[in-house]
Image 1 (cartoon, rainbow, N blue to C red):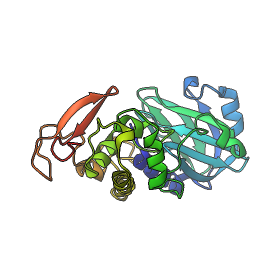
Image 2 (tube, helix red, strand yellow):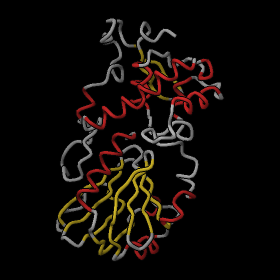
Image 3 (cartoon, one colour):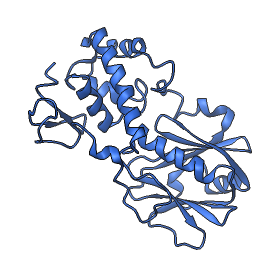
Image 4 (spheres, one colour):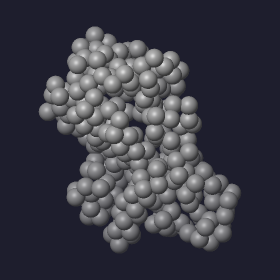
Length: 277
C-alpha cells in the first residue's frame, strides 16, 4: 500500500501535470469509489472546475478547485492516477475519469477496488471524517519527540502497531515502520509505553529521516502518471530498505539473518540482534 512518501510523489507529479487545468467532464465510473457522492454530484461539482493545487494530508491526496471544493483521494492498495491523451483507451480497472482542457485525461485505475474518493467543500475539509482525527504531519512543527513520547506512553500495544495508527503517528505503513524501528534499534514487539524518552527521541529522528530519504529517492513505487505502461513498483528506495522484505538475508549492520513474523495481520521484518530490546 502506498505510504506517505509514495503519496507525496504522486502529489508532486499531479502538481506538475494538472494544476491550472480545467476539468471539462468528470465521470465516476464505479460509484463505490465515492460512496458519499452520487455520480451526478461528482460530475456536476467538478465540471468546468479548475485545479488550483494538489496537496497531501497524511496518505490522502487532495485536489483543490476554484469552485471552493476539493477532491480527497486515498489510493489504498492499488489505486493509481494515469495521465493520457484523450483518444487513448482507458486503462484496465478505470473507476474515474477526468477530461482536461489540454486534450489530456486523468484516469484513476484501481485493480483491487479499495480506493476512495470524496468531494467536500474546501473550507470544511478538516471536518471530513477521513481527515478529522489524523495525527500531526511528521514534517510539521507539532510532530515533536515530546508529542511522540506522550502518544507512546499512553499505549499498551506493541510499538509497531501504535506507529501504524494514523490517529497517533501519521504517514507510516508497514515498510517505513519496519525501517524506522530498525534504524532506532527498537524491537517491534516492545510495548509502546515502555520506550524511554531518550529512545523515543531517537525514534522520532529516524521516522523523519526514513520518510525524508524515501521521498528524496523516489519512494518504493513508480508513481509517475505519465508512465502508463510501466510497473507500479520500481521506486529507487525499494532497493534501499534495510529490513523490509529481506527475510533470511544478512543484516547490513551485524550480518544476523533478518527475521519475519506476522503482527496485526501484517509481516514484520527486524534484526533480532540489533533490535533485541
